[in-house]
Amino acid sequence: MILIAKRTVMVLAALTLVFGLSSEACATAYSYSMMDVRNLSITFGPSQPFSCPNCFFTSDTSALLGGVPDGHNAFSFTAGTTVDPAEAFVGAGGPNPGPNSFGQVGAAGPSYARGDSILTSTLVNTNPGPATGAFKMVGETAVIGALSGSGNATNNQTWNLTTFHLIAGNTAAISFDIDALALAQTTAVGEASDAHLDFIFTLQALTGGGGVDINCALGLASSSTSPGLQDQTETSVIAPGCAAVGSFTNVASGSLPGFNHITFTMTVGVTGDYQFKLGADTPVNAAAQAVPEPMSLMLLGVGLSASALVGIRRRRTTKAGAEV
Image (cartoon, rainbow, N blue to C red; front, side, top):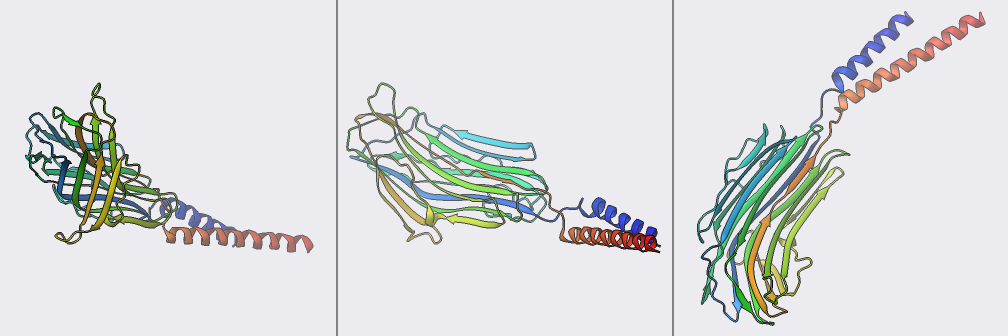
């Protein structure tokens, strides 16, 4: 009888290991980064003509899930034109929102990664007044069970052949409205996710032109390496490490609900020849691991406990027989 009971328990424990632990709980690592920028403008003081005969405007999307990539890019040399690459999407998750959808798909399985972007109006200023620029971009990924994923979108604008001779003390005033979110979430120990967004402005000094680069990087970052959620929105956009930048403001937009209006000034420190560049990206990464379901753990615990009890009972029986 004891032998039969012990074999039964051993079979139960083995089946639990084979069938119970092979199934995965929905332990999901999820990350999402999005920004929607509108009314972007730059105004030089004193006023500078800002033409763009041979500029380069690019927009890229990429997604990577478990080593499987998808990526697209689009570019234009014509100021004011829309630059719109195809959506990058990998995996069975979703449903796939399709191109130019920048809201959250969400963390529900199966796993997926995506990136999407559009540059709807390139930033071109002409004397006396500025034109405005706008773009949207998103990176998102959700992974379940020993998998990793990443999604990213980038937008870049470079005035390659437009040169400004700027005197020390000249300024470039930047303003724009932004709606943004960087969100990272994990549900089990051992998972990791992070979400970033970066918006970089550069007055690049030309070689031999006598100037010194002026850079300003604005951004958000969220990360999670233990069960929980972290997120930041446009209200938290900061300007870390901005050289020669002043008058930074970040307040609720008076014209666009849900947006914040950001302004700052880049001041030239050294007289010279400069080019203007700006770039933005929304990288996200997530990595998950397989986690046993609670029921599997319970069954395994029951099996091991029963096995231990059988062992104890057997030892007691043996001991009693020896005493007789």
